[in-house]
Image (cartoon, rainbow, N blue to C red; front, side, top):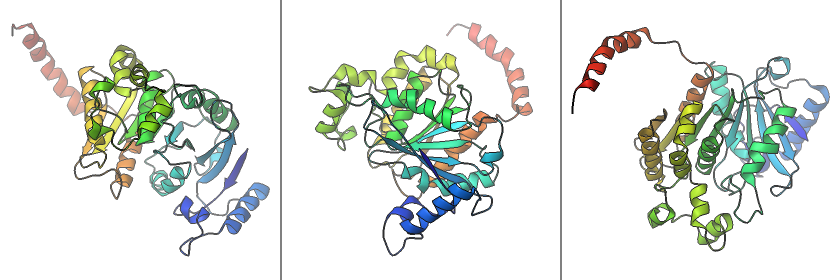
Length: 343
């Protein structure tokens, strides 16, 4: 089931559903807009994106799974399949994450920086986007299986790896990295902002300073009772990447990771560790350590913009830089000669 609403790009989800004095639109007026658009198909605001609210029935996770999808201006007249971006929220969040960052996306679309695409955020609670050890919830299986298929059947999006993208923040970044590394044949690129990952390959090496904000109850819900260290390792992005480096490298998966050096959860340590795994495995990637940035606050929007620009470059690669190519050709004989010399 889907429901379409054409809203001003600067209205966030909290303005619609929270009954405060500061709200910009009431539930009643929101329903009215939904009804008018659904019946007449006439846009209420020119040159605006469309928000689609949908849900999917499934036996893999608590059902139905609600989601928001953002469609670019002119979606109804576009004939060719569009790229599909799974836009994953952080821990305890929901599909409203897409609504809150909608102004950023709209601005990039209006500026011609971000190609037109369909962007989707499912409500996944604090699931880590993973299959629980006890089998009670299978979020990873749901997302890469029936959810992805539902989106491809419902919206005018690509049905192949090319143009299928992942973006996630915090817990969403963790999910994006895990699914990207496990299934590089399904995703062309991923961007992980301040991903909630640990600076270790083995559970025994995860220090209290890197897991203080997650309870033992949460860990046991996800990784089994008693806690299964091997299952944690099998779902730890750094461990997955290290064990499957050849596969990830050969796939050509485009990777962007970002974190603030003042992250309140010490996630900068896990992200730096992930960068070192990628670097030592010779897996190309882009890494941003943002000076003075924390886990929340005013840096989130510009950092999100940078990540989306990266994905835009994946979809529309810039031309070869002739000056850089000339330098490489000049240096190549010197590099080969240096490699032949004994250390």
